[in-house]
Length: 197
Image (cartoon, rainbow, N blue to C red):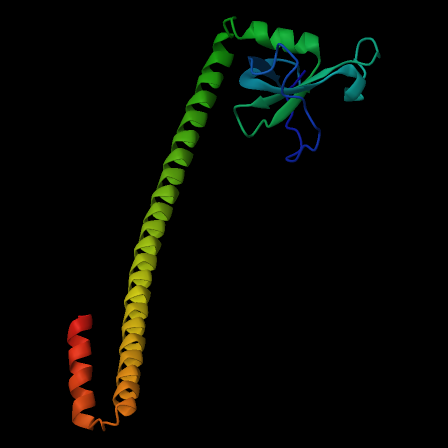
């Protein structure tokens, strides 16, 4: 049976445990319209459904049967659902030599996939590096802003403290019946400022 791409989105709730085939590497032949081997593709068993959940009937017997979900390494082939005998055949094919013409095409496919993955990984690396730089700049800006806010808050607290002390000084002098000249106030401001510093 020819490997055909599955829909981009698969809403089936595939089980990821409970089967010995989960995680196994498999290989399937790709056929042309005449049924001739023209290529091969590797994949992995990523999920399965027991017969009571699969809503599938085996092609040869018509009886309810479990299914195994294959994700191919080549995104162009996508996914495929296999019966158990097909999974076993795909497992066995991993250990068998491919026909020479198929091997040539298979090697080219692997080379193409490897190059594509390397390119994707490099692009992802650049994206992550750019994001890390942006995060660093943002962290530095946040730190500077926080530092300015702390300095501003400290100055405001010192100003309020000096104002309170001057007001208390006025009240104390007034209670003693003494007048405070503007020169005295400025002198006290200066002293309080120097003490705060």
